Picture 1: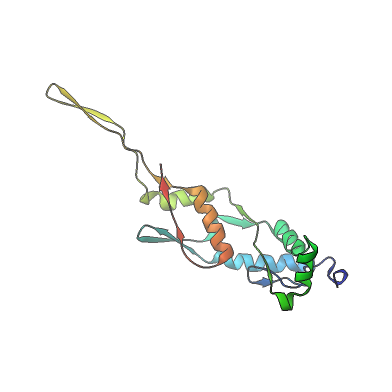
Picture 2: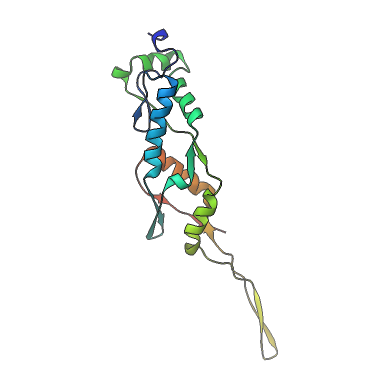
Length: 171
């Protein structure tokens, strides 16, 4: 039965909502692209404290279609046990493959612009004179959204398909 599925995705392989089992590489790539495009078009809710902001992941990520298709075609082939499980997919369940997403060049700039109003600008130290006495006011560091971890959480949210994404701020 393994020879029967040579050059195609094994039974039970899914990428997001797309069942790619038994599909040749070109057909699997088309299904993967359609399912991922649909998921990337749905806005993700970013939780900023008590406030919520929406962002469409399609402005932050693009699909690496070749890498995702390769991962789907390789799913269930890494060991004898995995291959047996895939070949018995109706009895053993499905193998989910996450899409390989690539951060768009302007993704961080877009998120920074969207979340900048929630951060805090840094304040420099100042010295003022009170009569003959200098009074020093301490500086205060600013805060901004931690974009690296946020992008990783948004990417996981795209793969999972549910829930809001918390935004964390730091210096």
